[in-house]
Image (tube, rainbow, N blue to C red; front, side, top):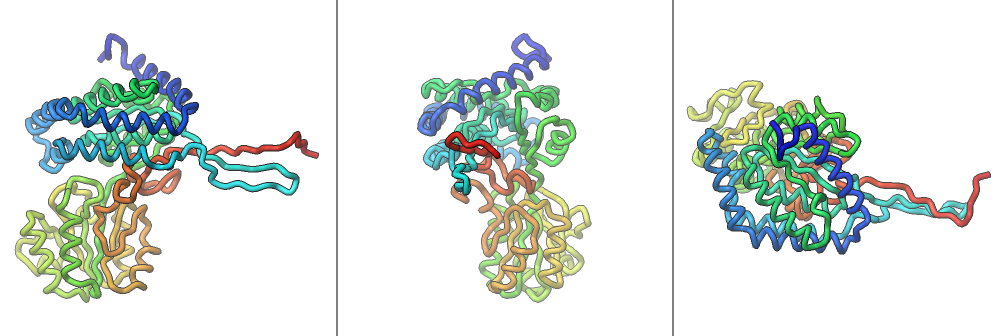
Length: 423
């Protein structure tokens, strides 16, 4: 299907080439200029709130008609408060130290050569994501702060919302004297564009997919460009006997129900067997009262007729809904083994009053985020003080966990001498 009168192939090439040119211009801008563009972006989002909500309403109507789950509709929904939070996140990124040009390390060699390793922009970042409009402004702000041009391809569910946000960003960039091609929102929902973008290795430097596992695997399989993966969030909460019951109930309910459709919501609860049946039953009943479907191991199923029998598929599931799997384990070591086997290396939590157990859990769990005595919902760039996040990487290379502006930089070596020659 053509876009604006040109073929998809031409459109993909044009997006990538324009982004490369914009990236080269951005690389020459000052941190102050990029900060100013972000300040204006936040102002533009606030100024265009009514327009954003009107376009979002169109997306919401289509989502309901298509049968999108309530949790996914919630991820898609904008309201005045959410738009205000989007703008506030941009403001927070604007006020962060400029990562570009930071000296990571440096030293002077015995021969007088001065060696430095400096942060520099990656260049052009393509982000492919699904039904969360706030990703558009978050990604744009982080890319701009780190001096990168970006191509943003959101899901069809949020198409009208994303285009409106993109228009507000373009207004701000023009006002700030930044080339508007620095942030390009893809103007088609045609899925065939994605593989075409993934072949633009000459102009796009890295691809970051955010969404379901099927989307991410498809991008990894098709891309000629390096991919930073943000796989599923099968997040666990493990409860030890030493954890106070009030804390366990509060953290588990928050981790599962506050926003069940997001990647840092808890999907599996593990209890040490010495927590005891009465305490486990009480927490399961609290979950059920909150509208959560509980799927448990054999021991948990015996505690309540409302608990359904879990299968091996449940232990590995990212529900993104009001469903949770619950299992009783015999030891901390068994909990760690279960998490490392079935988890997605995203975010896992321990609730305990024993510092030795906490330290062993932190050392043993192979995840990008490990939480001690707090909800998995805190696994978030904003909560970490990053202002926003490009996503939560489950990779071990190039970045891991919530990715802020500094994680969108690479480095170069700079060597300064005084006419030195090598003998």
